[in-house]
Every structure is written in structure tokens, then in C-alpha cells.
Length: 211
Ligand code: VGL
Ligand code: ZN
Image: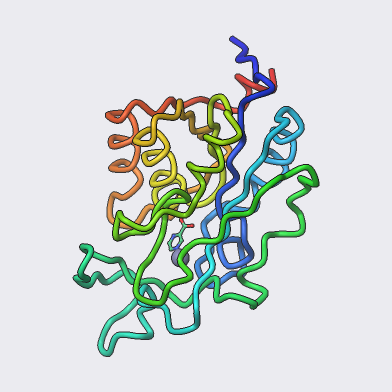
């Protein structure tokens, strides 16, 4: 079964940055394995958008900012429960750079997110306070795009939140599962897939596009 990509469709490549790749501070297991696949998929899309996790050094999501807390602990913030992470994707450091193995010269937009100290942003569409928008929906609506196909890191955090907010924003959203990898902390991967399925996010494999 082959799925035809239309000229209006958009590939959204989430957070393929050194800190999420092997050797990085928040390395996602097998993260490097998806890079060649994403490069191949990207050749099928006229429209590609990238997201980039982009935090100040004192970001609220870093365990290092909270006395007595360790990575993967949680804290309560005004906008809800926040998972704490190792310091990662600190702006203007190598860990925050998009991997140079990603070969998508025709990518048209990079959305940076998580740059306010007090608010995290897994989603490419809106920050974790669920109020501040990144502008991505505005951009896509103004471009009058078709379906969104989401790939990248990590399946259970930034990919899932981006896909869910895409659906909430009225877009037709598909996650290409084998072009993602997960952190999978505490059942987060199965919960993310349950949430995405409930919301109407489609789940496919890359061969359905590549043949
Ligand atoms: C991400 C945790 C913290 C992600 C970003 O890209 O999935 N996860 N910041
Ligand atoms: Zn982050």
C-alpha cells in the first residue's frame, strides 16, 4: 500500500539535534538511525519545516535548576507538571545545533521553541502554558498547506505534542513511526501513542511512502 505525497503536504522534522543523538546530554536511543531515513523521506516533500529545542542555560526544565531534584523527577509549575531533564539544547551550544547529517537543503522554516526560561515547549505549535503560540500554525495556514507528516525526536515528547497540537489546530496529521525514536520514561511511549490515536493522529511506516 503506497501513500502518495501531495505537493501541498509538509514534512515536520522535530528536534534532530546533537543533544538528542548518541553522545548528547539527552540522547534518545537509536536517534541516529532515523537520520538517513528522514533525509530520504524529505526528498519526497516539497515543503519541509524543522523544529529546534532552544533553551537558555537556566531553563526551568533543567533538573540542575532545582535543588534536590534529579533528571526525570517532576515538579509542579503554574502550567502543570513538568518533567525535569538533564541540561540540553542550550542555545548557541553545539548540543542545540541541528545535526549536520540531516541533509534537507530545501527545508523552509526552523521553529525554535522553549526559549523562555520559565516555560517549556515540547510542541512546535504552542508552549507548555498552552497559551503562547510559536507561530507555526499561522505560517502553515498562510501557506495553505495539506497534510502534516511528523518525524524526529522524541516520539513520546516533542513529536507527540506537535502531532496532537497539529490535530487540535485542524490539520490532518500523520506520524511516520519508524522515522521517530522515543525516550520512553515511565510508560511515556505507550501513553503518547494512546493519546495520539484517540486524537486521530494517523500512524504509518516509512515504506508506505517510500515503497
Ligand atoms: C524533548 C525533552 C525535553 C524532545 C525536548 O525533543 O522530545 N524532550 N526537551
Ligand atoms: Zn527541551
